[in-house]
Length: 279
Image 1 (cartoon, rainbow, N blue to C red):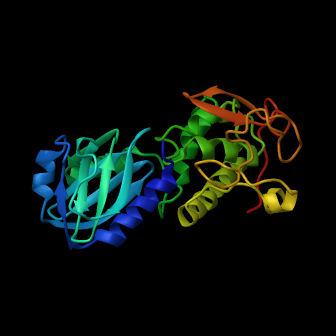
Image 2: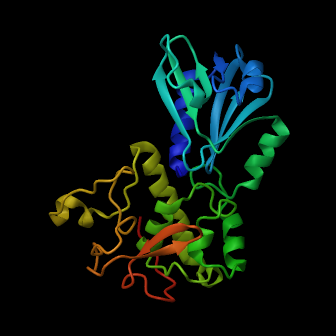
């Protein structure tokens, strides 16, 4: 499932390509046909993102609300005479030269301003949104006995944080993923939030997730670069059984909150509340 930085990159790209322009909207698949007919030939104002929710605003107070889910994709392609694989194309937004093709989303819905406001309000604070209030997340963390590794994936607590950022920020702070959230000290929470802001903003800019310090980059350690569809260099994510870049201990893994979690048993010992990270 795309993490928040991917959705923010998509929202920026949609605004840059189609913002304040009249566009054609269609649903070759047919599942979004009625809504597409209402939007076709109208102005696409801009796109926005909150966590993993993509909001595309059109004139007249209409918004297309998209959640890509596990298999959804949104691609930018040149417009030509043939629409590829129309049976899987939920929605196409196009101008005379380019198109944004949406396939396989968890949902794609047309909503009104009140429903749009409810989507934004229901999401937790998003480290990538200006003005996001981490106090909202802290109140839930401080009151919860659930593992901090679970709360980091809860989109009503930390909007946009996915499996990679969860594993990596916990490692960077030396936090036991199973630590009851309410045992996390406030200063460590503040450091985790600040770290997410920096890491996720970099991912938006670079288009990849890099979480390792310069001393642990491939060129510094004399090791091959990571080869993974997600790109970037990480400490523990998808490195089960491989040596920790910091201490050499084999990386551990287990399922938590329905997703595979990775951690270093030595750098993140049981019960560890972690430490602050200098940014």
